[in-house]
Length: 377
Image (cartoon, rainbow, N blue to C red; front, side, top):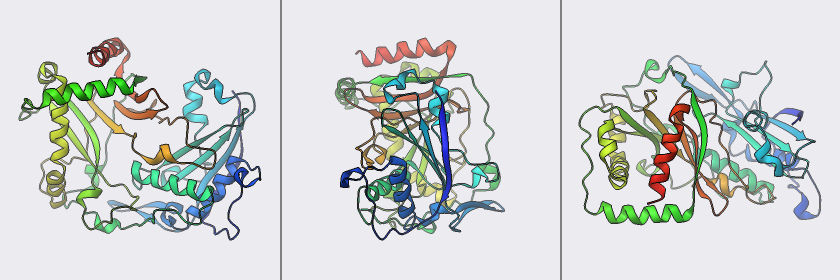
């Protein structure tokens, strides 16, 4: 498959007095043109996104210098999106994502976007963003704003705000605690589907079992860890209910011994996750006051430490640039240097999908067998 990237520009915040026209108004415009112009208009209220990340001693800040977002237009002349399953993973994950020229420092960029047109008339929107600025909810809000403007709205339905000072920084943090060297494991990139029926059946089974169980003890340092990012907007009472788009997550980690995990029922494992979620306000308050032994943001990287993210409720899936909501959302996980998984929502009847790098090749079949035992109860 040959991909031709024919336009690369730094796109700056721009006001468009005449609005945006495309095929819905009887004018046929390319998706790249529509999205590019909507992006420029969305950057006016979201002006920090057009800035750059800069380092000052032991902290990183956003310089709101208006240098713009890097936008790439690309085209595929010999393939249709109907050929998606036949497209090599390396092409899907690399060629459909934007890249900036050598004279720009990609590490300073807050967001880059690429729109790739296919022979069939469909298109793919590829996105890279800095997790130092955005979390999933935040970038989903920004993409939804672009879509709303692309569809003719003059302003986003949610007014964005940038009150980073309202989010406390722990007095215990230091530059050394933020740096992390990660080993590389030979982990297999995989995808596992879960139907709606399977998920509902598991929920019913777990609900019946959890009424009479106690969580396994976690007092000792174990050898199995699960970390997932928890949204903390609801515990920051000074934030309005909606609109903040910066990174606003706290990593919750569950630790147990391998023996505890092997002996626990599925309902007991779910109980551990529920307990961790309920502890979020207390743990975050302790972290913000410096009352902790280990920095929760300094996650140890090992083969027995799995990091999970849940994208199913992020507004990626509701973003409409004028051609309808996306058919599919796919993360870039194949070159991560640690074990991770991302929960996705796919077109019905699949519903739940776990994609990521979870196990090494020699353990893949055992992992699949365990999943099958779980979903076939």
